[in-house]
Image (cartoon, rainbow, N blue to C red; front, side, top):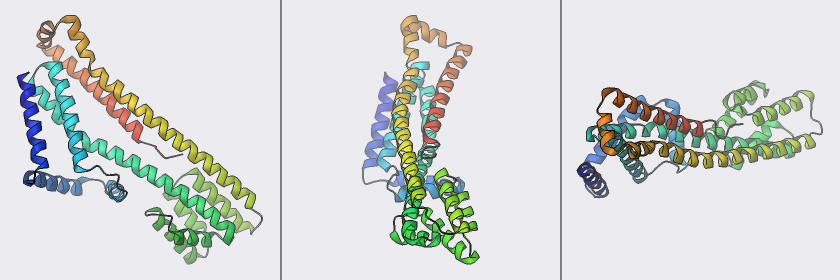
Length: 298
C-alpha cells in the first residue's frame, strides 16, 4: 500500500507541475524528443504526421499526458499485483509508456489512410462528373483541381497528371503515374475506362460512368461500414485484452496471497509469469496493429 501511495504522489506532482506556468523541464523534454524524432523517424511518417496535424487529429499535450498516466498506472498496477515488487512495477510502467510512440504511429497511419481514401473517392467521383460536362479527361482533371475539393498530396498528384499529359501529348503516362501512387480498384477502373474512351474515340459513355459512380458509392458504403465494425471490435478487444491481466487475481484468490507470494519467489515461476505478461502484451499490440492497418482500403 505504501508503494502505491508513493507512486500516486509522484504522478500528482508531475501533473500539477505540468499544468503550472513553470514548464522548463517539460519544454526541455519535448525539445529533446523532437530532436530524436526528426533524426530517426521515417520520412513517410513525418509526412503523414504533418498532415494529421493539419487536419486537427493530432493528440493535444493534455491527451498525451493522460495516455501516459493511464499506461503507466495500468502497467505499474499489473507489475505490482503480479510480483509484489515496486522495482518490477516501475520497470513495467516505463516499458508500457515506451510503446506509446508505436501506438501513435499506428494511429497516424490509420488516420492518414482514411484521409487518403476519402480524397481518392472525391477525385474519382468529381472527375467522372466533370467528364460528363467536358467530355475530355484532362479538362476533367483541371476542373477538379479548380473546384478546390482536393487537398495535398492528392491535389499535387493530380496536377502532376495534368503536366504529364500536356508534356507527352497523351494520358497514358499520367494514368500510370496515378495508378502507382493510389492502387485502388476504383481509380484503376476509372482510368481504364478513360483510356478506352481516349484511344477508341468519344462515344456515349454516360450510362457506363453512371454505373461506375454507383459502384463507387457501394464501395464507399462498405468501407465505412467496415470502419464502424472495426471500431466496435476494437473496444471489445481492448476490454477483453486488459481483463486477461486480471486472471492473476483469480489465481491469488484460489491459492491465497501469501501462498502466491511464496510461490512467485522461485526463479522459474518468475520467468513463467513474466512470459504470461509478455504474451498477453504482444496479443494486445497485434490487435492494435490489426485495427489500425488496411483501414480505408478496398
